[in-house]
Image 1 (cartoon, rainbow, N blue to C red):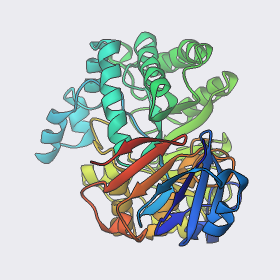
Image 2 (cartoon, one colour):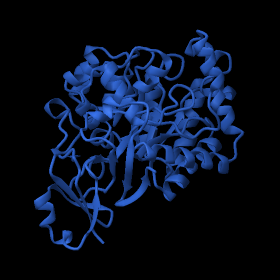
Image 3 (cartoon, rainbow, N blue to C red):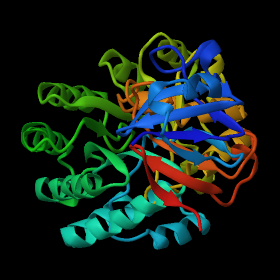
Length: 416
């Protein structure tokens, strides 16, 4: 049976041209103030002025869902997360508050490798239960699709375990999970001092097995001083391409090592973080199809300077915002908090931020043709917020204010 959604104060359709939004379209919301959305079989049939939508043949006799004067928009698409882990890194948190640096924490046994130890000792069933609980947290905040990275196993069996957990949770819903293989997140202890040998293992053993089991869509690596370099990026990208995996890159986060320009040359779908980019990088990004995926929640949590969102946007770059949800540097699953940070700290407009977590987030996952906007033929992923004006989503912070969330045309969350 078809459903018609009526009585929204505003509907943000994000309708527009194909491709991620940049330049003049960077804040184009496709806003309707007397609109309606028609849904059937999990897809959007029509979204537009109320009279036009109600004139559709399927609208006659359809079930009516009232938005009760609230804001309606596409479900958020979170294009960068690390959500499968055994425990939070509370010792790291306390050490950081005491003045320890990222490198000092890692050298003392904290950081990524402490989470690796937890994952290696965890049962798959326990990791699955943890991710299932976190999936509901994402959905209750208005997020309907996430990208999820492995990278806390760093050996074949444990990386496969993480990716299988993602598949199991995504298959049961309500959160859609797009998996990324991040085997090159750090060099594991058993390969200490033998980075090249570990990269060889990632390329020759791990990537082929991940692809054989169809466990990932993307391959990623932490391209950073002390972790992996541009040569490693080229090797891993080539192995991923041979296995049918698209490329994402943690790039220019803690320092500028030139990984972004290499990532662009290799056709990366996204380059993520980008805290240390320079004008040359911005010009190159604007001329490329790669989406800049910014994760300012980690900068907030670490007390670091924010990514140069304003320079990127004004330079013509397509920008997505994501949480970077993870147990060490950003334990935040709420994209509305990220929107608030983006507006107050990086001077993005509310409209630019909302574009960045919907249609541009979808393009950052290669899902722009099916997700991220309310247009005919697209998946009916919709969030309704307790707000009368879309600017309130950036203005009120500290609680999600989610009224209800729809995934593939079905209500999967409703506030009490």
